[in-house]
Figure (cartoon, rainbow, N blue to C red):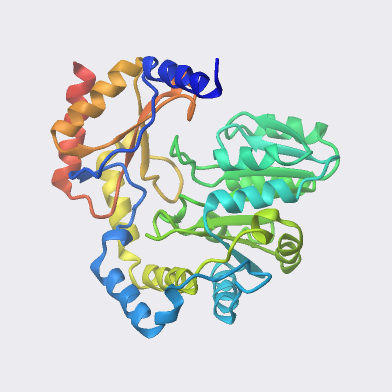
Amino acid sequence: MSIIDEFRVELQNRKHSGRYRQLKKERQGIDFFSNDYLGFAQNEEFKDRLHALVLQYPESILGATGSRLISGNSDLQMEIEQFIANQHGFESALLFPSGYNANLALFSTLPKKSDTILLDEKVHRSVYDGCRLSPANRWKFRHNNLDHLEELLKKATGHIWVGIESLYSMDGDFAPIQDIAALCQQYSAALIVDEAHAIGTCGLGLVDHFGLQNQVFATVITYGKSMGLSGASILGSSSLIAYLINYSSTFIYTTGMPDFHALAIKASYDFLKDNELLIYGLQANVKQFLPIEEVDASPFRSPIIPIRFPDSRDLEKAVELLEKQRILSYAIKHPTVAKEEEMLRISIHSFNTKEEIGLLKNSLKEIKNE
């Protein structure tokens, strides 16, 4: 059997299991599936600010022409990296084209052969992929389970690296980040926090909210969700950033981003500062959707709500029924999550109206009762 024939068999098997992925044309409807939590990506005032930047810096939209260590660097990007670091209370920052690239850089570069990496079992796939490029030992601890984490911390050898998300992208729950940070300090472990879904939804993220900058080794901030753009930055000490510049293949061997990318990221921080009411609007909408008994005890409420179906066929049916109501949703299936955890992933936004949220709640009740 040829390689292509093997591909066809695997793809056919995936179709039969109902887990075949394919790109779809844009759909019109009520958005309950994007990560545009604060509506930046559709905000006309934000678009106007970006348009003004293009007019002010027309050359910034062009390519960087090389890696940042050769011809692809600029004073502007370095200034904006320092601006980002200052915003979050860290010494330094380094820009990356995506959160995936940033996590790949950290976990493929930092842990060495004699080290141990401890990952929350539900941390993002990019973290696991980064670890595959590292020779370090890698263990998983049960999701948000402090006892299991401490048990592994006691057994770990070499330098210990702990990877978590502050707000988990699938389950939508918060990490007990203060307790994890304290445990990591107790066992001299380096804590790396992915704040992809907490930036914007929780102000500047939970590391900033709880003032944990001195207890966190590195933080990943991404701009493709609440901030309405794309790209990411790694925050940490000046020594960490210098080390990544010298040793991270993900940084060294890729073309730098256009200056406009960095300018837009700075604009998104300014826009967030000027529009903090959007965060309160988001929190109010989450509160409307969630029954009181399901509201998390965190100072923020998660806009990510998983709705699980025991049968994947019911999950597909739910997506179709919601679409008939012009409600856009997305089914999360294995292997993204475990088979028993397949779900409808609902995202609440600041721009969703009370009527839209009411329609979603009523539609889900009907689906569950069928």
